[in-house]
Image 1 (tube, rainbow, N blue to C red):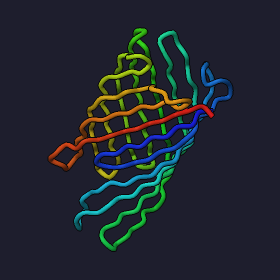
Image 2: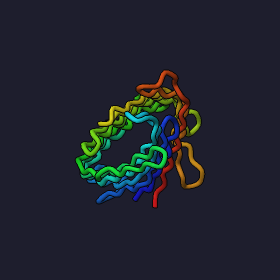
Image 3: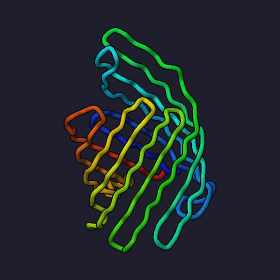
Length: 204
């Protein structure tokens, strides 16, 4: 089993924790499952002015991972749920919990011994959301460093795009990390903002 967590901080903030388990070893072909729960908030402008949107989301997906000479590919599907609350001053409005289907695909490829290409896409019908990220890295010691780009959109009309640099797979003891930083542009905002992402994973 693998435990993981991530913190995304920028125009919005979101914290996720979860676990990955396989019927056999996670280091070989086989059926695997992912479960995650997370929460966060973002500032937005509604019809009556500025407000905060708080979100809690959870998902449990299952699928299969394939190991090749060049890397690993995986595909998952399963249920997801999301609940939100809008806060504008003293006005608090809880939205109904929504349920849907989540599709998750990812590729970790090593075109050469010294490079890494990683791509992930996650689509969910609970909030009609799509998140995608692609990154390339060159190995410096045991860490891959290079550019990354990501996008996110959902049913509220919110969208963001980010471009930055990442350092992936640097280890501290039994924990492995990925750190990213760059600039982020959001729909409806004239100026780009900085963002920071930190991910950690460790075998249980």
